[in-house]
Length: 139
Image 1 (cartoon, helix red, strand yellow):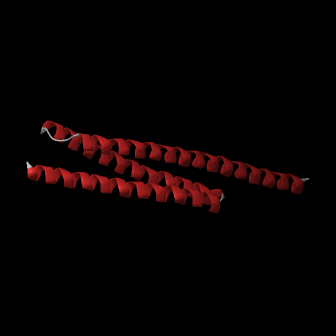
Image 2 (cartoon, one colour):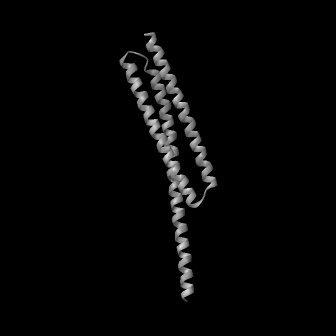
Image 3 (cartoon, rainbow, N blue to C red):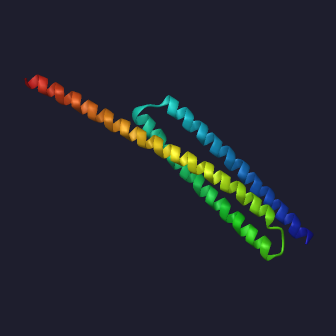
């Protein structure tokens, strides 16, 4: 029983480590998003927004994998008559991180939409100037 307890303790420590790493990565991504928004414009801003979306998708996959592992560990602990509560606590932390990730993903999607609209507006304006110049030359 002591060996199982030590094993569960190690697994819980690893789960806590994964949470800390994920939280740090999400914080870094959000900081990078804020920095890119203030530093980029036009097509560069759209490219940055699309890259942000891809980075957030990777974090979402990592989150889903960690949640599945914790759910499996909680089920295993319950089945073996062990302590499932610590796993439930970890799953609550993951739920909060998942909510933060969803918020960041929504922000990135909104930013990409704004960048696309700005890019389309700039293209239309450029086309309008070119068309007006052609009409003026033909006049």
